[in-house]
Image (tube, rainbow, N blue to C red; front, top):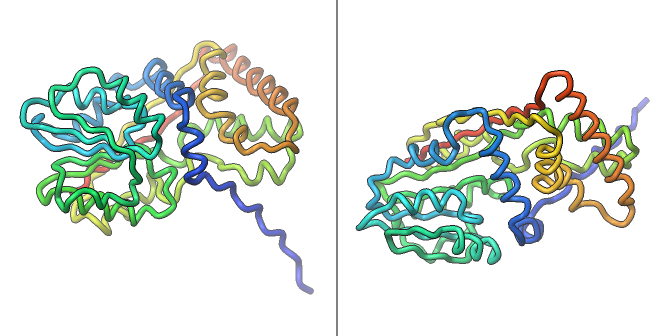
Length: 294
């Protein structure tokens, strides 16, 4: 006798349209960045870890692929000096405008360009001494195409940096979120289509394997951290404005009533408040790495 098997629901696709919408404003990205810096446990800010991995003299040519709102770029550019130059590229015009406003100190030529990481053909082979791609691979379906382009535009004696977060990062938030979704009555098929952690074909676990196909040397430099919230309000802002209910809100259609999100919000807030009452804080563990490729 053959037992029928129910196929798992097809996962939601977070492609180009989602990227342009998600990064059409600064709300989500800036909310995450603020929380990562204000509530971090690691004494060293992540941007300092990235800067140390670049090993700059300040006179290099540098390409920032997926510069976003310029949060990391701002620190890098301010440390460059005569002889260097920087190109910032992003797929979102809104992010480029924000980056232009955020990067207020630049001692070297700085160019902002709209473009896609899949196609860097406007730049010659080996055009840059340093190339960095921070947190873009969560949204890329064909990582080999992008890595090939990063390798091509990196000078023979240069280095490319890929910064990425583990799929299992922040498990405390995702576990609480999905338990609450089931408890308040979200449809099972909708829940099943949502990501259970960081998205992307390439994640921290397989980045070295992917990168080694394109670079002769790949070195992982881990950055472990934990966000500690002593009150519920900043975490709820991080969860709602920063992560939009772990991606559930932008994927909800008219069949998902707003009341379910109100109930989800209240349920998660109760759980967080209970953890804080018990321990004095609510903690999210985070796992990131910078991969230095040459």
